[in-house]
Length: 378
Image (cartoon, rainbow, N blue to C red; front, top):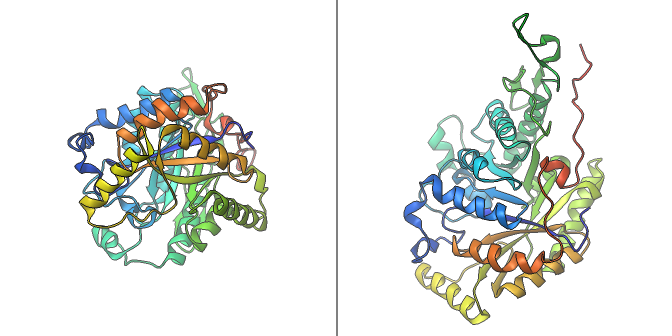
């Protein structure tokens, strides 16, 4: 596990921030939301500052992630794919929901991102609850949480098998014989489950990481069960640091019950942030957002409003629990919130301990490259 003095730091990028009225701020750049420059600028800024992971939200996950109900959002995979060229080390983790997206398409999208980024791709798994989202697709009715996450578990299994359906050395590129692949090193996955029937193999070669990072938010008993069994990185929510420690202990216990080694998981606490030069200024910023919405803001996890040194201390306190590996910072307002994180918070947090350099994302976070499950099989 990462040492307590080097907590993992992720940022959650969605729209103009997670507060539904953040677009009203003069510095919101709401008019730029549908431009590539807005997103590549934010992610590139996080990369240069040493942020470990950039989570990019998806509008079909609003119901479960608590993201602001903003009208429209560019596709998360497309955003991260565009950001590849403007970044060097940050993990690129788009949300791709599985309720209305076939796992075959998910597998090739994330594998392609991993190829393009040189092994920096992750996949934040989520579901789409509610009849509104179901009606947009018209394929099936809304499902309850238990069925949604049972389907997600199957989807994760299918995607993982497809990522393994090409062996590492399946590409031979023999110009003399005109053979691009060794067909014996491509494998049918022959998956038959309650929700999917997939034969395979993938149409995308095995990517640099072999298996891209799987991230799941443990928000209820159903998502927690799937996260504990299948995720590499688990996002948790809690009202305080002490409560976060208790949640993390429960998640690691669930992982042990699922037959995993609990210490191999990475657990990140969601921290919603309003950062200003002083605590009073941060309170005023929050009050302005609440005034626009006409309601008191109800955070889904720890809410920090204050100055940069205070947030740096909070992050250090989180990592010092020994059970939580770091934080996902969720600015209520962008881009100003990211400016404060990268320009003021991270320099305090990592002044004597910079974030590690490039390489495969899994390895930088302490995971081994998984063996191919089909290698050597007929």
